[in-house]
Picture 1 (cartoon, rainbow, N blue to C red):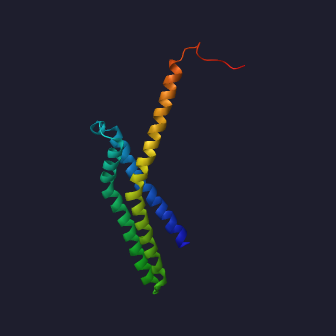
Picture 2 (cartoon, helix red, strand yellow):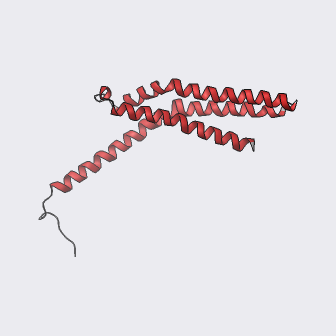
Picture 3 (cartoon, helix red, strand yellow):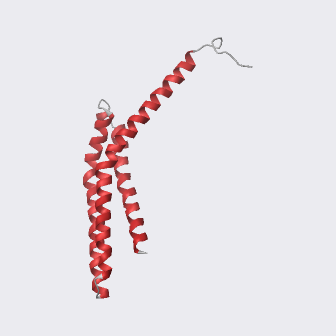
Amino acid sequence: AELIAISALLVLLTMGVCGVFFDRTRKNFKNEAYAKKEREEVINVSARESFRINAAAIIAVAAIGLIFGIFAALAAMNISPFIVAPLVIIGCAVCGYGVLALTPAAYVCVDGLAEKIKLSRKKKKAEGKSKSANDVSVKA
């Protein structure tokens, strides 16, 4: 039961801190101050801006897990309930690495791919509009 609770906690934590990063990125893309900058640079600026709040949230969850582990061990007068605390701390460390380091890097790659697809669709749409009705052949 503890592993399921820890897993749910870490998934929610990851969703929350990724949401902060994605929200900051969305706001920076709309900001006119970053209009002339490359998309990769805007994503990196967003990662730097959201780093402090994301790191604070991850450290807070790790500290809460440690405090609950200590209180559980004291309440049970046994060390076995304390095993949950290192699992939460390790999970928070993995979450922190994933969100603070890997998510911005992956977002740059996914954003670049999405931009290529968007440009190719615009190009195809423009080519389709530029053709006249006589140029289009109908197959029977």
